[in-house]
Picture (spheres, helix red, strand yellow):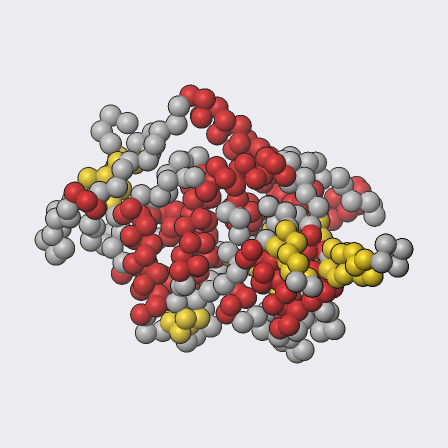
Length: 371
């Protein structure tokens, strides 16, 4: 598995545009490149809007809430701040998360704590070969008193849904999650039933045990925004885990609620409004195009994957305290986002992704004088 922290690089290929970083946003100016020539004025996008004092206050309060949320997750999943940060990024980007790792590393605890801290309902599905689609979405039952059918909602009608060992259930049941993840609704007996606006799926699978499993098809994988691996904790973190177990015994410490569902929805809308300049978008399009033509890539990034990539870059920029997206955000978030949707000839897409990032020209970032 690959994490965003696995890809740290300084890229300096030829540039086409200069993006000037200011306190309130970005400004763009043309840069002469002998190979590509000057760009016309029509290629210049407007600079990102600056925040007024009131906006700064609201943004500061929002980030404080998210910092508290991440701090709560760090107490549950000790020693993995890079993982909890990406979980929060995925949540803010309205994505869904696939965790591929061994059992017993805290995936269920993480999902439950996230639901409690975000003020949402928690649902869990233990995926097995005999699991039916109705076990996830719900079903209609005939009420003899009213002589009408009544809908009984399934666990998918939670705010945070944990689909444990998703690759152990049949493709028919796996596909039942497609509509829920993409449209945030389910259809039962010809009727649509909306899900929570902040509906979030955290699915897990064990990469080291394949007997009796059903690998997720590309259409299903592309519904996930990221794929992460937690890994074993460090020695000190495991010692703290043992001490905590002695302190609390069989009881589980209560997770404080940090956000309400309404506040989370507002945060997601705020993240979605983060400006992305035209040069950065053009950079992303060229990266996506490179994944489709690379000799070692069997399946490149789809337009849906490109939209997900931009949303997660917006969330990462917002989490870092900026109201604009830089090429560095695009690069940093690329491994977990592209790792779930790139099919390569080998087992690891990271070397291919690194090569693509190194060979694609990056818009130059220059600080504005006096800032």
